[in-house]
Length: 420
Image (spheres, helix red, strand yellow):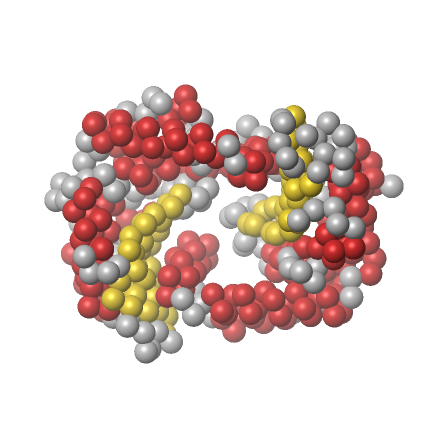
């Protein structure tokens, strides 16, 4: 498999990887414009714009967009994160040019029909309502807000109801003008693809765009804090976040190995102690996520009202214990899980195209898999123990609680237990 990367004169980037033996391909446009690129009055507009891309272009109606891809057995979708918006499709190899034409069309030529804006506004307001009705969704929005309080990175991707209710056609067009320049776009493809053909299509479709300087997002500051909402639910939802390295910091590998060993699977410490030994919950996990300049290690669990206090204190105790006796075997297992998860995931052209786009966004290039595996293998048990100590004692923290949580300890109380 060979990764090839090119750039048009206007800054538009193309990256692809041919995967021999495949009869299909994944292809998409990743735009470095997400939730953290919004001003406060724009909160939710990147996601709104993603929806509107499928509501009609100068050449196709919304139905024609869907039919163009589904008539050949493919699928098309999009998502918005805090740092990117992606528009992508999966098709058979003979339909790559068609997918490229449709994706380019929805990115470059949305018409923002006022009637369709109103229809989609209603859909997004329903999506927001659904999120509020899903405790293990909304609690992570609250945790993010407490982690990065009063910053773009801390705001919800969907946006608040009052903002979404007021966005106009001019607001959508204005966000495109600010953030959808050629230097902010990456064409990424994997599977049965021909890089030279992609280059030709990219030049024809995107080569005319004029370069524009992208807006640099506000630097992240992990603030920490607590959000607690009492509600009559079956479970008390507990989520703890701790400041961790960003994805340009090699410490991210240590952080990911730590969170895997702590709560990344059935053999992890939290799963074994909290669920298997004590039966305090059905779901508990730890994970590490990263952004350009910051990251968070998050622990989540759902439990009963009378057990949430015990669960919270045991979680802190297990974090402290990991700093003292994390074993070579645990670290080796976590390394193996990380590598296997990454390599198994890359058997999918969709996952591989996603990886290529993200690496180009982060580094401007695609480091080899061998380099990434070597960095994972270089993390020692001593590295993980040192990181575990910083997580248990020093790292700034945020806490979110939802449900019957009156008996749950406060963030201050958890901090005191960390320091004890």
